[in-house]
Length: 171
Length: 145
Image 1: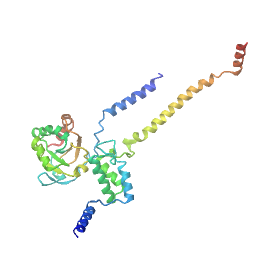
Image 2: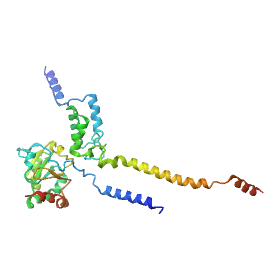
Image 3: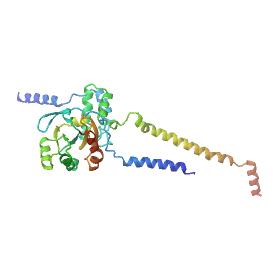
Image 4: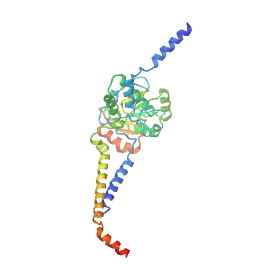
């Protein structure tokens, strides 16, 4: 009985620390979830104008990537598979990159993107709250951000988070 | 003539590339803001300390918005709308951050209360065990004989 209170305090502290240590501090929750995707006016890698309106119409992934980004190579095979086998629309935002480097990278690794938008100065990235590529947003058909994945998209993230959201509003 | 023209060209280039300078007052606001904004890439640094490209972008944003005449609150709102309260080293007091702000004081008050109770409980029996001076004197006298 003498040790009941210290023991309770200890258990509480351990529970708090246990939760705190398993959280990933790199995953900063985005305030943009549930908000319409921020506007931008950029051009595609081919030089055609592209704005946020062009992302609407069907649920899609918007993937911020760059040819200089190592994590992007990690997730690339999965993105390719999603585009080819599951028919997922993936828009690539080429973040702070050289168009030529981006084209070469895609020629080497394959191109999963429905459309590639050049964001050479990272201005769209800033408005979307991107702080390190790769980051992937799930948009519904109305262009509202439903989910943000930070870091390379994993099989688990696709299965548990992204696919259910895409299926939810798909026609 | 040639030298003077190139000198003028050099000055023109300098004027074109140099960003419009902040007034000392604006400079102080700029320093104050970048010292309490977190860099999201290297999370335990302010954007003033960080060399990350994103920190440079954010510093440039803060400077540009000060020059546009935005208030500190507007600039912070611009950043929290994109990155969340996490960018602020001093997050606002609200439902989700109450524990963060009040927690240390609650813990301190709890510890002080516990210490007080502990000390009081320990002092009480000690006072009761005080020796009666007459008995003590008698005991001492007996020992001397």
